[in-house]
Amino acid sequence: MLRAQTLRLLSSRPTFARLAPSSINPVSLRNMSMSIVSTSTAPAAVGPYSQAIKLGDLLFCSGSIPLDPATGEVVPGGIEAQTEQALKNMTAVLKEGGSELGKVVKTTVFLKSMNDFGVVNGIYARVFGTHKPARSCVEVARLPKDVLFEIECIARCVEPQSRL
Image 1 (tube, rainbow, N blue to C red):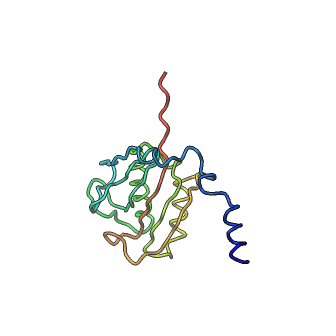
Image 2: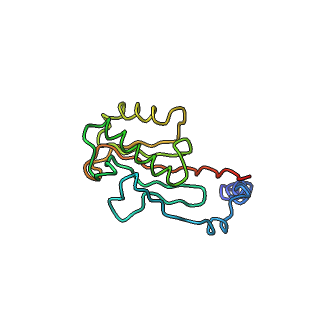
Image 3: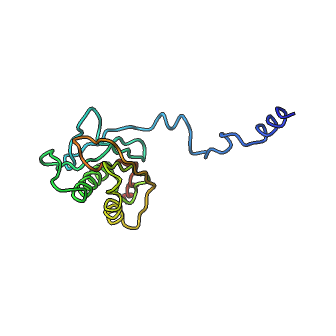
């Protein structure tokens, strides 16, 4: 009896195909162009990865850490200076990829210490202003170059202006 009720319930539920927007098509996803985004106004990647990848109208930014783009060194100062610099670096990558802070849909923040959450939150709120992307924030054991802060994001790309 339970099996029959389960089968009836499953067969009466809409399938993914009926729920999925018609604009999502597996074939169109395969045909999206993918390109590497790189800028000298942000530090070069510290490993075998790209600063960002653009796929269609989405930009996937790798983690930004508080390195000075000119020297490649961690900026001096504590959590405030490091948070500011990492956000500047991420903003530079967003700009190069055709996006901006107001188009960020999701960020992930990595902290060396959750004790810095309040300070980081204040800087993050000031930098993003009224825009409030989805966000995760986690404490980690260690970050590259022993920095205190890292941030990555996913953003929409700015729609090109029509030319008349």
